[in-house]
Length: 291
Image 1 (cartoon, rainbow, N blue to C red):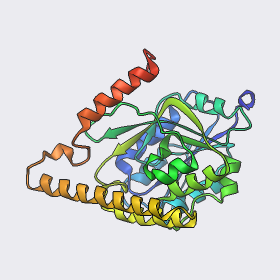
Image 2: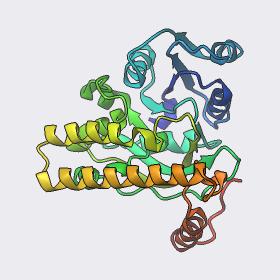
Image 3: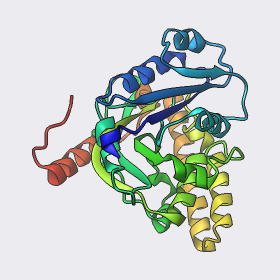
Image 4: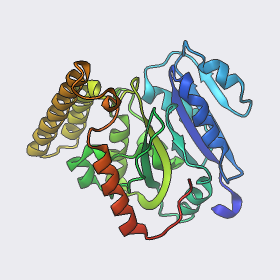
């Protein structure tokens, strides 16, 4: 596949993320690969998103009302022409010069999708170290829905088409739903390489305020897959617990007991950084990392 440089299509669903989307666009431009198309499907933003899109003539983009993120992704897939498809949201971004490596993993006809590593980024500019993505299997997804690393994942186009794309009935869990359906058919190639950044900010969908909505969608998916009731109950209990912890943290921040800097980050971030650093040293030794 690599000898012909297959086209890579990157789809970016967007809505009112003008403050971040330019970094997303730049991250797709800063790649070491000659054949990339970048498709932005905007949901009718009222900020400066469209003005930013107009600055980049290489983009394929539309701006119109849609049914949500999954609908935007399906529109993008219909517009795309690539053999390999990536999905990066308008507030996230790729690491520089990864597409050449991504494409090389699709040289094997058995590879249907690949999953790399992801790092959390916070609005104050600090970062957690990259974390190795957990091994993805159907059973692993059922037992731990939060192991999805969408930003660092790429798909063979025909596999997405065979799944019917993304389910527009899901507002929060369209990525999990897709992964569950894909894992029923084929397991991804797991790649221990650092590929993408997930941004944590106040306006993101994945904040604690949407935990219960996401949990309800995941429950529907698990019921469809006829998962054991004990696993569904366990998931609902964990989701409720995380929601309660998030609510308590917000209240403690509001009254000044917890510093404001922890509103968008784990309170035990330093401990997580230390554990991630130790794990990285064990798994990769002195492997050089791009700054």
